Amino acid sequence: MSLLAVHDLAVARGGLRTVEGVSFTLDPGQALILRGPNGIGKTTLLRCIAGLQPAIAGRIDMAEDAVAYAAHADGLKSTLTAAENLQFWAAVFGGGDSRAALAAMDLTALADRPAGTLSAGQKRRLGLARLLVTGRPLWVLDEPTVSLDGASVERFAQVIGDHLAQGGAALMATHIDLGLTGAEVLDLTPYRARPGQKHRPAGFNEAFA
Image 1 (cartoon, rainbow, N blue to C red):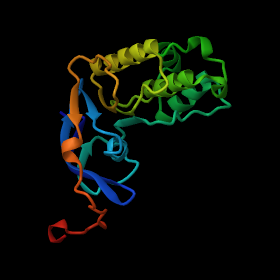
Image 2: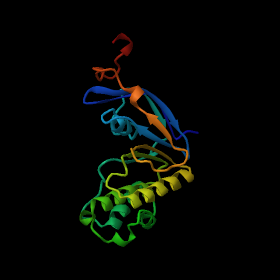
Image 3: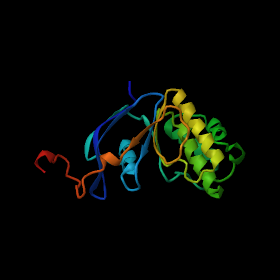
Image 4: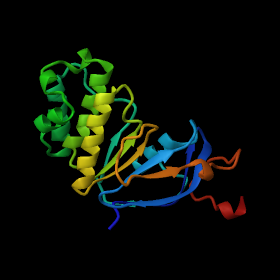
């Protein structure tokens, strides 16, 4: 059974459609990488799937509380330590081993450091470590390797690989080759919306547009 099924989805940014007619499924153990030029709507599509904004048309089918979303912002509380940040998120999501998450992203030595004092790359690793304490099977990731050095990219790729091996799935927008065996690529260029296509009100019958 698919963890995510997207049917004929259309999304908009700033009142204008970006992509439309997007359909795909994501099964346990699968990774799908979104590609396309800047501004085509990769982030907007991911935000819709994560439940942060409504789609213009189409349908998204997935289990309730299935998604863990990692955006450009790391979502850290700067006054809390690295360990306290993960403990906070583990409590929010109802479980998860914060110590194992720290170790997975090579942050154990920084566990007692306030998040606000970490470097950009360390903050990014800590933000991504949150995924490991959510218990969510579907990871939705927007350019997750920003600010990461080569070694950290390899480490995060291993984390994703382990997640897939355990029956999870990952949907991500990234230009970095993470070396994920069997990962599929969806180029959004063919789904670019027609120029000038505006966001229609809810209930608008586009057959009469």
